[in-house]
Structure formats: C-alpha cells, structure tokens
Amino acid sequence: MNEITPAYWIGFILCVLFFLALDLGVFHRGARAVKFKEAAAWSAVWVALAMLFAVAINFWRTREEAIQFTTGYVIELSLSLDNILVMALIFAYFKVPAEQQHRLLFWGIIGALIMRGAMIAGGVALINRFDWILYVFGAFLVFAGIKMLVSKKEMEPEKNIALRIAKKLFPISPNFDGQKFFTKLDNKFALTPLALVLLLIETTDLIFAVDSVPAVFSVTRKAFIVFTSNVFAILGLRSMYFLLAGAIGYFRYLKIGLSIVLAFIGIKMLLSPHDNSPKWFQIEIPTATSLLIVAAILSISIVLSVTAAQRETKK
Image (cartoon, rainbow, N blue to C red; front, side, top):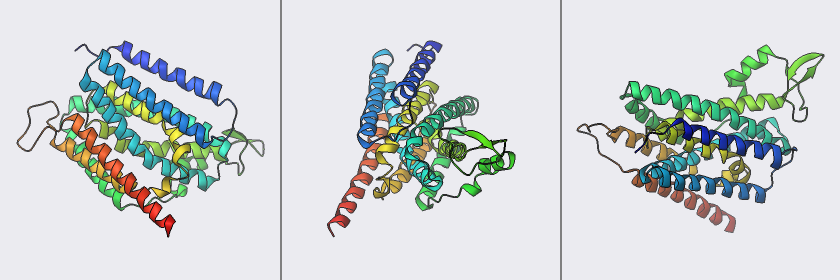
C-alpha cells in the first residue's frame, strides 16, 4: 500500500476549508437561531459526508483503513456527546442569545481543529519515538472512564485559569455587543461576554481532546486517519448540539455508556500488540469488533435512557 502523501492532506484540508467557508459565508451569514429541522438536516449531511469519505478510503486505500476511520469517527462522535452537555451549560450560564450560538460554535470549532491537529501531530511523534507511551494512554483512558462515571458536571467559570487570566489582562464588558468579541468600555479596549464564552469553549474542548485524541490511537497509529476522524466528528458537533442540547438531559444513562466506552478503549490499547510482536498478556482485538462493541454500548445506553424517560412520562 502506498504511503499517505501530502496530496491527501492538502486535498482534505482544502475541502474542509471550503465547507467551513460555505457554512459561514452562505448558509449562516447573518446571526440567527438554528431550528431543530435545520439542525437535523445538517447532522444528516455531516454523517453522510463522513460515510462517503469512508467509502472513498475503501476505494483508494484499503478496507482496513476505512474500518479504522469509521471506528475512530464513531468513538469521537460519541465522546462529543458529553461535550454537548457542557456547551449547553456554558451557554445557559452566560445567557448567550440563541442567534449568537452558531457563530460561537463555528469559531470554537476552528480553534478545536487547530488544537486537535497539533495534539495529533505531537501524539504521533511521541508514539513513533516511545512506543510504550501507548500503554500510558491506555491506562489514562481507563482512569478517565472511571472518573467520568463518578464525576458531576458543574459549571464553575471562576475556576477556569484562562478566564481568570483574561479578566486580569482586559476589562470585561457586562453586556453583549451583537456578534462582537471586542468592544469599548469607558474608551478602553474590552472583551465582551461572547469572547469569554469562546475562550471557555476552547479550553473545555482542550480538556475533552486529552481524552478523545488518545482514544483514536487505540484504533490506528496513522496520523491521517486519526486527524480525519477527529475533523468529521468536530464538524458535525455544531448541528448535533442544536439537535440534542434540549434533550441531552433525558439520556440519563449516556454518561455511563460513554465511561464504559472510554474504559473499553483503554483496555484495548493495553491489550493491543501495537503492530509489534505481542507480549505475553496481549491479544489482538480486530478493529471491526471494536466498532461493533462501541456501537452496542452506546445503543444500549440510549435505548435504556429513552425507555426510562417514556416510563416516567406515562406515570
């Protein structure tokens, strides 16, 4: 199989930039609230594009790489569901107007793409230099899964280091100023609440990336597959937010499912031979099997959540 050349990277990044420009410059040029039907349509579009990309990989590359991409995409998309809940808490805490939320998420995703790209590049470099780091990633993911299970989501912006630094360096306007991130306050340069929300979204995504990026390395060590699966999940995150934010609280068992997914991925990483001669405690778990297990865990958690909600409604 041929190597993944720079042409693959350039072509993919140009396509992503085109879709982002189309999104903000054509479909969402003006500030407006995103309705449920529109969010559902865009969610379907992004999932369809991801699956078409998997078909393209299968055609131009290999079936195994297509399965790796699909598995990585499902893992990233599932872990993004927890991110949606946090974003909903952030918007509610700062009382962000509905018409400003899409633009905030757009710029948040731009930052997320840059951060994920840098983290993936660093992760690949570490793995190539120190193969044992994959065992560290595996142990960390098991720990992260347990922590997710026992932790509670609380919105405490005052504890965010980035926000505390920003408040020390710049005056903060008490009111929103349309779509502006910067304004004038007493003839001085100041940040608007919108800028604080964007900063909080970026730092929150960085925290989530610490879990999600190592998770995809359990599937493959190929930077292109890891990066593209991350990008497609992130691109679909905005529409999924508007689709699920109002109902995410009903998925009460989703958090348990996500924590099990994280723990499973960590265990897989600990057991995987990592393309080397397996040690005595290692066994090979096929990527297709991993995909089925992750999908089954998520499906069961969602079905149980919906069933429990329906039972409460009938009472």
